[in-house]
Length: 159
Image (cartoon, rainbow, N blue to C red; front, side, top):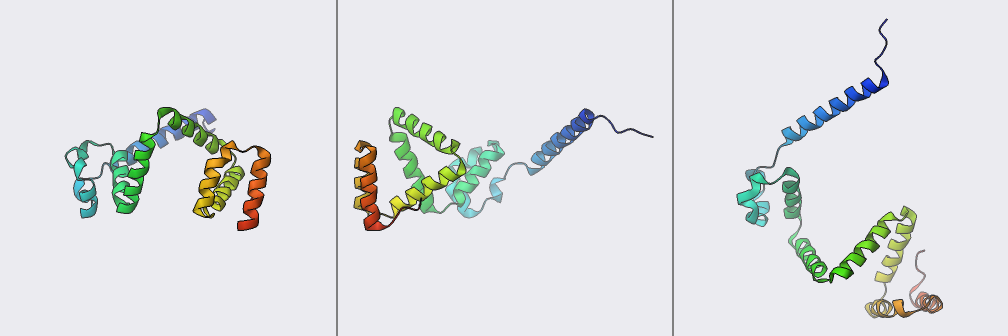
């Protein structure tokens, strides 16, 4: 009677098999040819035409996704990127830390924050500006009072 190979050997064989599979499938996938792009995609990506075949597959895929976006969305992304680039380095670092902190929060806390932000965005623009300008200067009691006033005018935040 044959005894099965030890667990470590089975895991090693499985790992090797998965590695070989991933190498074969990724090489079969290959890169995207310039000719496989639509006319619209080639128009958007024309500056990459001469180097297209030399770009890694993941870069080609990312550029193809970029070209598939509507022009209005690409313009908005460019604008936001320009704004980000124009921020002082210290501000960008602070914002990156805030984003990292946000991503580390549990899902339920992130959902509360999203709901709060949605409520804020539903306020009239003047209220949003006032809130943005004054919030950091308010203490906890002033913030509570201000939120109570907003709640009376515009309804409760969904918290």
